[in-house]
Length: 70
Image (tube, one colour):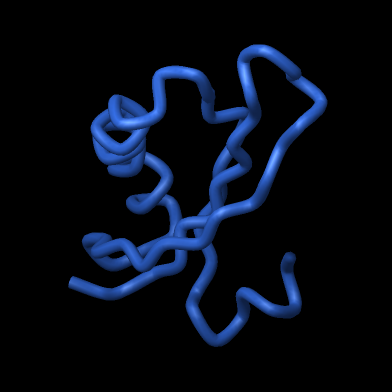
């Protein structure tokens, strides 16, 4: 398994324009495509802790490439 960086845009339900970008290290099974497919259950579990927010979008990048793609 490889570590990839999962970049998530999280927005407030009360104010949909209030969004923030969060970065998490995520274990994927070898590719960025695999990360995109494996992320939804992880995101659902994470968002259960924040019922007043929603995930707007997410992407996966290799950790050393995250700065250039943000």
